[in-house]
Image (cartoon, rainbow, N blue to C red; front, top):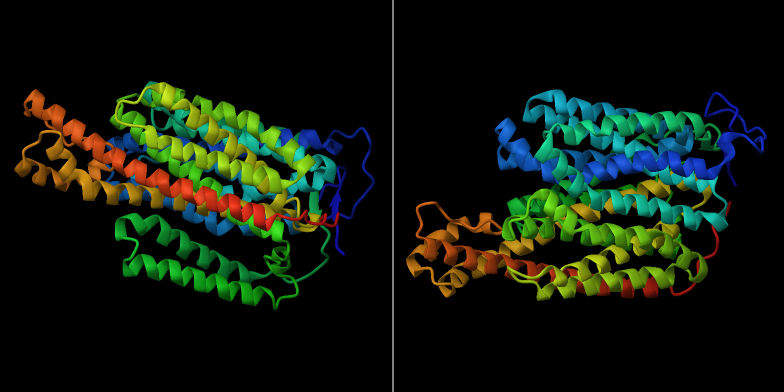
Amino acid sequence: MSSTTVDPLSSQDASPPRPVRPRDRRSNPWLTLIAVAFGLFMVQLDASVVAIANPEIGRALDASTADLQWVTNAYLLALAASLILGGKLGDRFGRRTYYMAGVVGFTLASVAIGLSGSVEGVVGFRAAQGFFGGLLMPNTLGLLRAAFPPRKFGMAVGIWAMVSAVSTALGPIVGGLLVENVSWESVFYINAPIGVIALLVSAAVLPRSRAAVGRHRFDVAGVALLALALLCVVFGVVKGETWGWSSAGTLGCVVGGLLLLAVFGWYETRQAHPLLPMRLFRSRALTTGTVVTALNFFVLLGVIFFVMLYLQNVRGFTPVEAGVRTLPLSLASLVASPLGAALTARFGARLTMPLGMLLQAGSAFAMLGWDTDSSYTTMWPPFVALGLGVGMVLAASSDAIVGQAPVQDGGVAGGLQATALQIGGALGTSVLVSLISGRVGSTLTGELTGAGVPAGLAAELHAAEDAVAMGIAPVSTDMPARLRAAVVEGSGQAFMNGVHTAVIVTGTLCLLGAVLAAVGLRRTSPAAPH
């Protein structure tokens, strides 16, 4: 069986293995963890700060709603298409090399976004960000898999998960501060100093790590099939809200992508050196972990999206004030990730993964008690439960996916996890927003009339259901104060109806995820070969 080499002295990633000096700085796995944490923090922070910057980007560049959707979608599409490829390239040609290439590319693309001066430039360089993020993300886990011994890998993954969860949750606060006090461009410029630090630390401490697979043909056809399949699926998902989930365009993209994935799987089983070895899925833990990872970020990113709409548009908080109120989520994930890793190491993922999903289910169902003027005492407990649940599941699923893969496939397994994470996040945002929009559309007129708005005007205001689905009341300055208050009340209640529908679906999915994890991980999987 092929094995992974770690060579701190070689000048080339492809060099044959040499003995590692005991005191060599590149032989310390904890330094490897510190180095990859910088790159991971940069990518995950960027993913959540952009949502805060989008309204200001629209105003500054005179961008339409469709343009702003592409600011997010271009990044998601490029990232989804390149994650597994990035992991495979790292496994074969050098994880350190491709991780650092991802850091450099992501940093330069971030600066280019701020300098572009047009929405077309922002979209184009966001796609470049996504591609380089696809090189960076999977190799963080691949490097950890190769550097840490099995008994310490779980704790390393816990810290990795903590950095990921905290940076994602801190995004709204950082983005709000930068947009309010500097400019929307600063949201991207902030990646420059982080990227420079990541590059310098990586050059100093990262070991040279790759799978010793010998000479073989690279699976170009597999790359093309997988990229096209993921592009179709993610494009269908992100356009589902605007096209309609039952529209021919949405169904055509998603079904076409799934068919291409099936063709890809069939093709890979017939290759001597496949891009994504199908044998990985013989591990029930890995397969279960992949599905639950997607569900985990479905919940996290979907809930954060509508929570920010609620706090800013319904409650009237500024971006910074809204971000500060979600701090319990960040702090809980800070605790949960290493705790989840320790519990996973002791009891196995079959305890921590279902427990994390149950905590998220509790968080979702607790949000059923929210209304348009809920006190903060009703808000922070669900934030704590969500942070604890996400952190535990992320630590457990990383161990189940990357920890169960052979070392030589560590980068590919990291790419698989990151792909599931991104697709789950895209689904969460799109599906939950669609559910909120549908419920708003069916209840808006009734809620407006119930709040005291005349029936004729309520029927006219129904045309503003898209704005109400974003938490914005369709009021004008020439409305009498009493009528204005009635429109705000009715619109807010319609939005909360949508939120309650979304959290019922979210909580139910979390319960199903807990059952899947308990069944799929009911026996401890054998240790992967090292």
